[in-house]
Length: 275
Image (cartoon, rainbow, N blue to C red; front, side):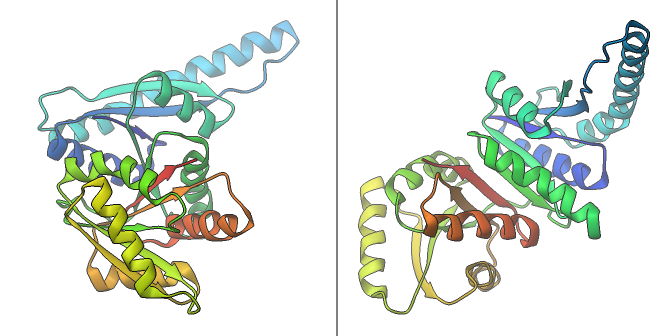
């Protein structure tokens, strides 16, 4: 597996790097660290163009210097036998630069920090992660500031059931690699038959042939609070969710809930882009 970790050299991105390297040790995966530099609009005047190039060169040199201690600390944790790669790219859009780099370099997972210290810092750091989630076809693992890697035992998959078989098929290779138990959680309104929904999910789990799994149907609102409650009840190691091109209901369920979980979750959130 190839793991990409975008970094802005903040403490939060350092948490993501440590998490990714320890995860790579567990999976025998490769890790690439990526720093995205702002690519400002080129000035039209020749004198200003030269000045802009000089500023860009200085920024690139500074980024390389800042990578040195980050890489040194990451390599101390690295037990894969594979060197950690360091890359610097320019881009006007952070999420698009990360997305294109991940696609062109065959990355299979993007690991990013989420939840800054407070106020604007919290919003900006979280929104960068969410913007990559929404742009990337490659799954994004959002790491909360206090998270530390442990062997994954229990993964909650928060599902709306619409594309259940397709989505579990996507999840299955990750579950196998992590040797984790999948707990399918569906939050419904009280008018639906919980037994009927549970039987439906169990039938699909049998078809996709992943036996290390359980099913939980819960009712309640808001949905993110119900998910968070089940995370605590189960002592889950990760939450997995999918985003879609959506109907009005799906926009309500997925977009807002995935964003809230990315900002609020105390455990890593694995976000996939589905159909």
